Length: 425
Ligand SMILES: Cc1cc2nc3c(=O)[nH]c(=O)nc-3n(C[C@H](O)[C@H](O)[C@H](O)COP(=O)(O)OP(=O)(O)OC[C@H]3O[C@@H](n4cnc5c(N)ncnc54)[C@H](O)[C@@H]3O)c2cc1C
Image 1 (tube, rainbow, N blue to C red):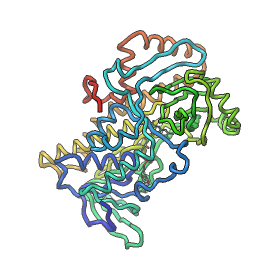
Image 2 (cartoon, rainbow, N blue to C red; image 1 turned 120 degrees about the vertical axis):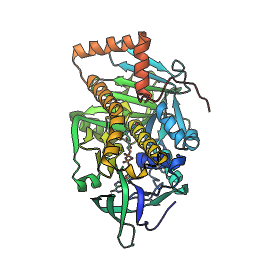
Image 3 (tube, rainbow, N blue to C red; image 1 turned 180 degrees about the vertical axis):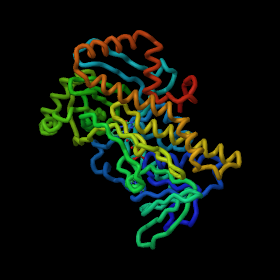
Image 4 (cartoon, helix red, strand yellow; image 1 turned 60 degrees about the vertical axis):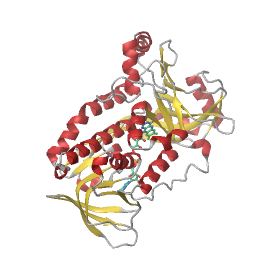
């Protein structure tokens, strides 16, 4: 529900209506115990107005969402709208250029309809935005901004601004900061983000191949760094896929300067001919890669969610998936507190510490998994290459190892997802 100016008190204020803040709000909306809570979401941009991909459909940016995230979107009531726009990943092929080691993960071996899905970001954002705007419970102030934050005994005191309205002072038991990797709110609060540069950039582009991908995603380890190719829907008869190619910083300028033909030849040489000849490359975009972790995830009356809490290397495709698991845990803890008539404890430091403790293991495992896999497969040392290949061959031959890797890739590291079951739409 879009509003023009906020009330004076809320139970929860969420700053940021992106993939994480928006999904978190809708998880709360779907929990019956939260019905009587006052929730405000504020974003400094209008929601669902991102038409950037509409004029160049070939280049639409995308995100891999894991099987585990599917469960979370189901819980948030978003799955039915999301599903028609997704491409199922039924196989993941992991290989190392120039070496024999390879492993293939299959959805049927895990007894699921897909290991994960690829969603075009515009579609994801639109589904989340329409859920927020149609919600009767979530008040949405967008565009709007939080001018200042001050801790007070009952939570936080915020000065809000929206359009030409005069600034309003409001209070909230809890402020959920989900304003992305360049958080001005954290800056204001003096919460530092520690960046560990990988010395790499991700080159993102959509590409087309001669052969259909048949739902297969590829993770390939090359001399420049790991490379991922994710299946996308065909467009105007072209078999499309999304490329995330990791380049070391010193290779970036040279690779970006290549003509499309030379770029395709360089990529083909590294990716091989699994999908036949590469036909086309779209717009190339670069992202500098860092592992960024917030120095504090909680303060009295404040909690960080999403990229602001942890930004991971994109090649392992875990950033959004981990943040959604954090969001679900926090939402469910709130519902438990409300059901136990402990709503007043939401935002207490000791209550927030329980959230951090519950998510600590999952966060550590996922950060280490993304970081180590990336570093291991970005290293050209012959000894490490041998180790990788033994690892990949071993993984293909030893079912428990393969299952472990599959569960990581599927975002099933949290303790609550038990045995997998096949669920068709
Ligand atoms: C190239 C690339 C590929 C990726 N691929 C994958 C993948 O395949 N799988 C995966 O799981 N993850 C992937 N990720 C990670 C994923 O994109 C992020 O985890 C996710 O976008 C984080 O969402 P967020 O809501 O935290 O931040 P954002 O999506 O950045 O949203 C932040 C929101 O806050 C708003 N905002 C900003 N400042 C303010 C403010 N001061 N006040 C109010 N609102 C504000 C913004 O308008 C925006 O709506 C990838 C990342 C990159 C860079």
